[in-house]
Amino acid sequence: MAAPDLAGKTAIVTGASRGIGLAAAQALADAGATVVVTSRKQEAADAAAAQIGERAVGIAAHAAEEDQARACVEQTVQRFGGIDILVNNAGTNPAFGPLITQDHARFAKVMDVNLWAPLMWTALAVEAGLGANGGGSVINTASIGGLAHEANIGLYNASKAALIYLTGQLALELSPRIRVNAVAPGVVRTKLAEALWREHEELVAGVTALGRIGEPSDIASAITFLASDQSSWMTGEVMVIDGGMHLGDARGYRTGI
Figure 1 (cartoon, rainbow, N blue to C red):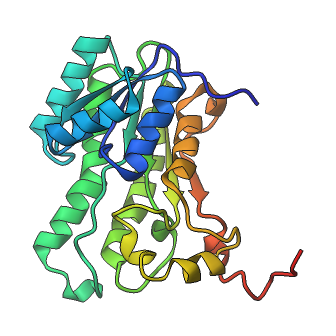
Figure 2: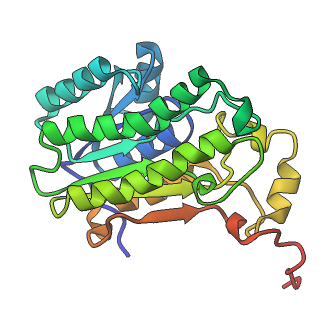
């Protein structure tokens, strides 16, 4: 299969100053797209764009602030003539512990950033003509946590489960012109997920079928595939990319081959 070709396409990636967002923006640019990278602070957005190269530009926009999101979308259209790809990557998890110990402020922050923001950015991009030049692609960053239950991160996982539902709903509502898919990463080497691997990476890697935790580039490759015409008959899907983690503890199965 040939490498994805995104020449002539324009993409917006939210939460792109580091981690999966930065890797996705880099991969999209490497495939030929012009990429708008967002971050809460302009300095961080500019630094990410500079790291990516000449096909990238940084625009400050807090993911859950509608005025900032609208301004980013409008600037993108004015500067590049349209939007073809939207990657809703920004995420947060300030809540740790049982669900019944969470307060409304933490609940609201998680849901605003992880669920409302992807819906809002998608709506704004569609309003601005997403995919008007030949079909659009929206990719949401979900999580394998949205497909199972885990101790202490139930609120985060609930937001990702809802995002998975939202992905399918939007795929139907925006069909046939716009495709909407999601990636569901396992434990990836990012700051957001570091509590899941920083102190026990060897153990997490050891129980995972493919023997390592994920890297942002693993997820970026899937996002680029979903943004390209190589996935032109895919919509409403959730791509699990977790090294086989969802299969369970691999240690008792290994035959030593």
